[in-house]
Length: 152
Image (tube, rainbow, N blue to C red; front, side, top):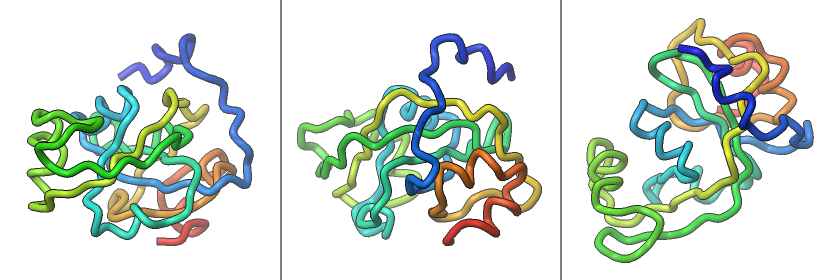
């Protein structure tokens, strides 16, 4: 897959290096929603209460790497069947396979910023949420290197 095909339209990688990041795993359907500007997490997940300014996305397929990050602009609590950033199709694709929870926190963010160099999977991927800085994302070549810098 050509990760650079979006680079011409992508925002600059100019986030402050010391900004805190939450790294999460995304399947292809989830990553497409991230491109649309949102990522849901069941309200019971610790990441919904954690302090961070950015989210980064480990893509399970087709690349098995952290490829992008984005600045979080809002955290919106949404209950199934009520208005919010997600529709029923989003619930079915993004929440139902993983959780029976009826309330999620939808992280909304700016356009995705591609990393100049993806953080390649050399281990077992990302499970749960990892916390690091933007500079950690920029400097780590592999997930094991990122894990050594991150709080997991």
